[in-house]
Length: 150
Image 1 (cartoon, helix red, strand yellow):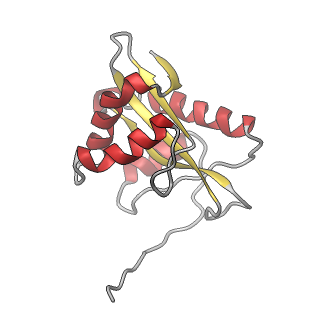
Image 2: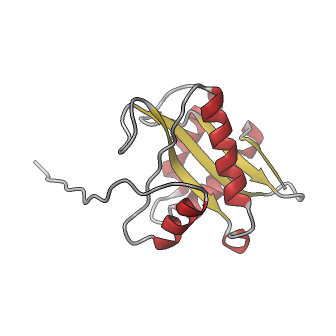
Image 3: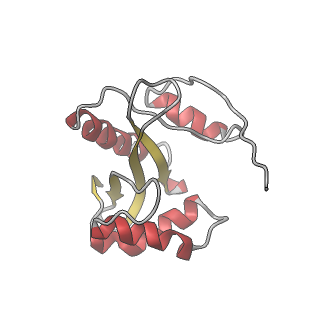
């Protein structure tokens, strides 16, 4: 297995992984952002700055990590690379794929001159909390977000 930056030929596999990570969203909902990123055009808010994939020996993608740069991230100072999506096929979790993806993101962030990396997880997603802690993240805050229709 090898970790590398996403390529246009990975489009369908990247969409498959996004759909697995976000099962409440249709694949078609991800297409504008994926196509914008692959073509180098900013078409949607929080378009990733970098996307890393893990490719199995078969050529199939088994994980990915999307990284953007946010102007604000809880517990950080100034603009910060932010892990927007991080996913590994369920049968490979705990095998080092997630760690390898995160190391690629960290390397990219350092090369861009950043000294921090931020991420988040749903409050009830304790598996993600454990994965973040396993690769060196420290929890900085818990929040509940509200919305009001006008």
